[in-house]
Length: 114
Image 1 (tube, rainbow, N blue to C red):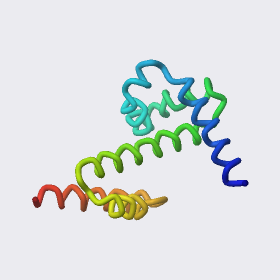
Image 2: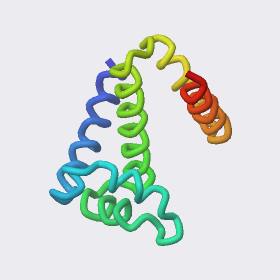
Image 3: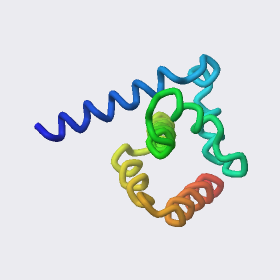
């Protein structure tokens, strides 16, 4: 029962974030992903969404990161990778940026070796 309540609260946050997005951001989610990399300018889109949605910047950034992870895993599965392997490899880097980067590098190298 608590998991259901937590999931509903998370969906409510996500809905607020999506409703605060511009039509341009809705059509091109890469804009949000690129904004996470724009630390020099302090992620202006994330700041605006947080302000307009009433959700913390951390929650907005987490939403975007989760979206990007899902998009990448979906693309990999659509390209023919084993879903279980995709799931395992996505979990490898969880919480560890260096490990995620190393995983991505290995995947790129494996693709170029084909």
